[in-house]
Image (tube, rainbow, N blue to C red; front, side, top):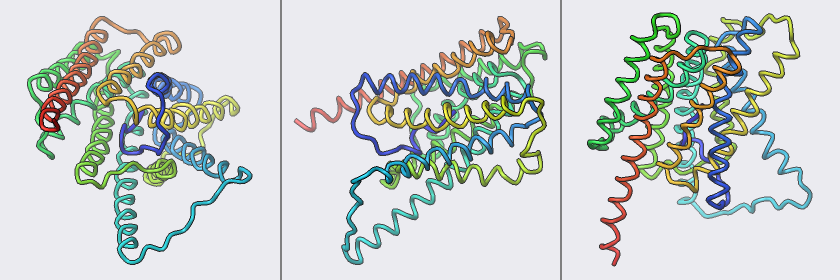
Length: 341
C-alpha cells in the first residue's frame, strides 16, 4: 500500500492505455501485500514491525539496483556538469532542502502507514484491515485538506465522509467481536492516518511550488528513511524470526519487497503521471477488492453480511470522493477556458 504523489518518479510520457494497465497491475499487486503478510505471520513468529522493516529495506535495495544497472550500460552518457554561478547554487540548496523534507516526511508517514497496516491484518484479518485502511485514508485526506489548506469538501465530499463513517461503524459494531476486532480497526485507522499525513504533506509542497516530482532514487531513499524509523522497534520485536520453513519465509519476504513494493510503486508512479487523479482513485479500488478475494479464497477468512455492507459503504465513499474531485476539476476547466479565449 502507497502514497500516490509524494514519491513520483520521472518517467517518459506513456500512452493512456498503457498507463491504465500499469495502474491496474499496481492496484492488484498492492492487494497481495496483506495476503503475503498473513502468510508470513502464519509460517513464522515475525511481527508487523519486523515485516515492515524488511519490506522497506528490500524495496530500498531493489530500487537502488535500477539506476546502478543503468549506469553499467555500455556507452551511457553521463550528465554534463554545469557551472551557473551563485543563483544556481542557491537553487540547488533549496532543492535539496525540499527533497529532505519530502523524503523525511513521506518516509515517516510510510513507516506508520504500512507498519500499522500489517498490525491491522495480523489483528483483524486481511479483508477488514485493508478495507478500513483504504476506506478511511481518502476521507482523512479530504478532511485534513479542508482543515490545513482550506480545500472545500462540497456536498459530494461531505456525503462521502458520512458514508465512510457509516461503513466504519457497521464494520466495528456489526462484526460480532469475532470477524472484526476493535484493536485491528484502530491499527487500520492509524495506518490510514499515516497515509493521509504523507499525502497532505505532498499536496502542501505542491501548492507552494516546492513539491516537484522526485527521481526513482528519491523513492528508494524514502524506503530507507522508513526502514530506519522502524528498525529500533523491529529490533526489540525481533528481526530474525523462528520458522520451520526458512526457504518459504525468505520467498515470501522477497515477494513482499519485489512485487507489492518496488514493482508496484514504479508502475503506479508511471501511470499516475498520465491519468487523472480521480481516475487513479477509482482504479486503486482494485486493491481492497483483490485483498478481499485473496482473504476468502487463500486464507479462508469469512465475510459476513455486516462485513460486506461495511465494505460496500466504504468503497462507495471513496468512489464518491473521486467523482466529486472529477466534477471540481471539470468546473475549474470551464472557468479557465473562457478567460483563455
